[in-house]
Image (cartoon, rainbow, N blue to C red):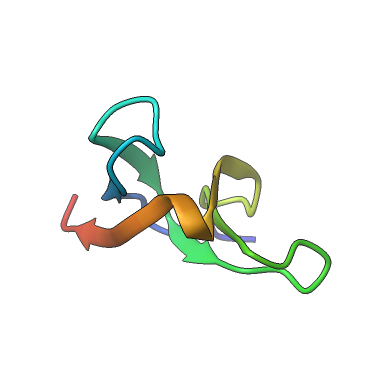
Length: 66
């Protein structure tokens, strides 16, 4: 099974909600899951979780070209 291409994602946190103001993560895609409402999940090309962030802590998540 081919893996999905990876990209750089920028996560910008709401003031006082994240470990920093923003961070970058290397992942293939962002998604939500029915069993984890309120969370955004970034996964790698093999569909493994790279990062999970609470929706109420995030101001924006944007994909940058790799």
